[in-house]
Image (cartoon, rainbow, N blue to C red; front, side):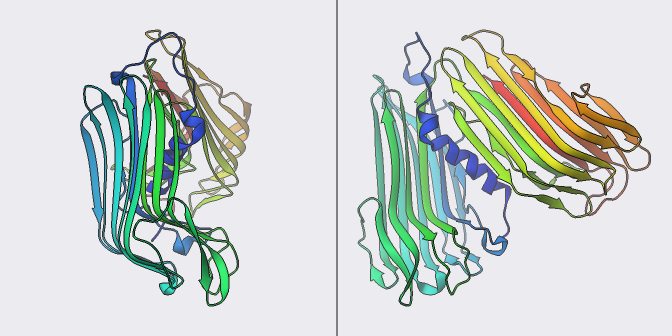
Length: 421
């Protein structure tokens, strides 16, 4: 399967589950309550991460709860059998993620069920693979996690695996007599503290660690049966925002390419990033290293920050070039009920647009340059709201066909958005 935008969305969700997220400071001098607890979760059937584009895939049957205080709330998804070249086949998948609340506790729970797997030419086979992850916070702030995996007829390199394996059971992955990696069955991670918790359960995590007859690059990872949740009390509110390096949208609003190097702000604090060594959209855009870094702090004050940088940019066949383009948006709220304050630290280095002198440093917001018969270009587009700020450093509206993009298409480069609610 080709890589989808969900891959990028997934990276953001995994960042939410990271310990740095769950360890963010609680709001000072405010006693949390159940209605302050924000729940999040994801579930999917399979996900393949690899440097080899032809085998990247997923996540399949992706369900997400987002960040929400609402209860009860349920999200479900399902998918038929998926076949990935070299990797193998994953049977039908169903997933669900939900939040629920009683008078004494709030729970976030995720479940994933995969009918069967046949991976790596039969090195891994099994059926009815189920995983569950749940985090519950009581009205007194006590956090508990619940995780489980069940499976039928699982075999790894010919070795039978118990129906209810112990957490983080690790088996050698062999091709013939050669060990080419490892398989972690019932892979679990968790964290629990007062008013905060999280848990991730995966039926299988396959790690390719050496050269192998299958031709899979070292570092390839295959995940089957993911269920992940997090919950945390945040009396002060929650964060939002995201950034990306590039995105192309058709005139009817359909996203044609991207968003690339996309990352969100962890809604309850923490850091996350996404990067790429190079970008290419034939006939439209090329770039060198791109990176989006997000950072959030939740405490007596709230702070959401997004920085996206694109280097060695060439757009529209060289009509627009730059050594570096940086979009930077930060929103801070000093105390509950205070008015959010947003700042814009965006810059460019050696930006050249046909017919316009080279620009360095700051660009006046919402500067419009027209390339006759080609495109209308908005530099440093800024949109402010009562809760935050969105900066798009280069926005191009095409007046002719470029590559696969028809007239009226929109190309955006280096966007950063931050807000607090």
